[in-house]
Image 1: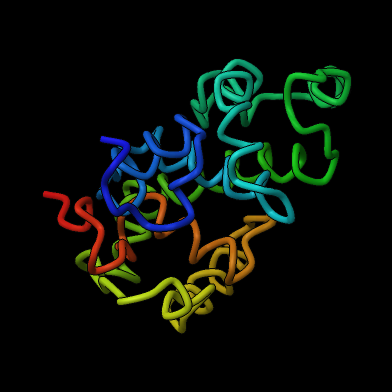
Image 2 (image 1 turned 45 degrees about the vertical axis):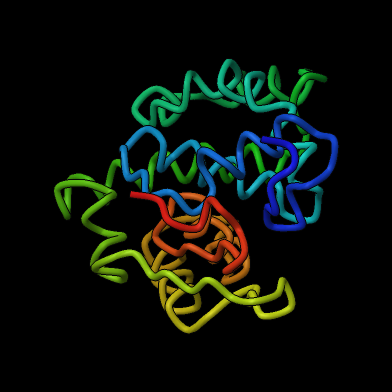
Length: 188
């Protein structure tokens, strides 16, 4: 499927980027574990190229206990120091700390709302599908992401600015910004 007219950001020779674009990005997936995984990957991507994070994804899975929030929430200062020495992941203390803090926040949200999925769906009831004509028409944030980011910060999350949250909503398929010309625009 290399000859398809994909969204331009995924058309490099990077097979992982193409697979992510074709099978994940914009496709609704609100599995609880996946929600935490993508939130963590998006916060690590902040200021970096998505390809860098994607190529370290398996290492992040190992480092963050397969993205099981209950297990990550139990991580200690010793675990943090171990992760800071792990060259197979992005060693940014603020981001590692945020990933642990966000796992704890998700557990609080689950206790309060029943699930993190329900919490997110309070902001976006059904997926938003745009299909812009060109990449320049895809925003980096919107009012929903701004509102959600503000609320998430109040609820104890870190590294969840409006741009990170918009990207996150795209990643989990609550916002689908595949270009109109992209054959992967309609995910069921």
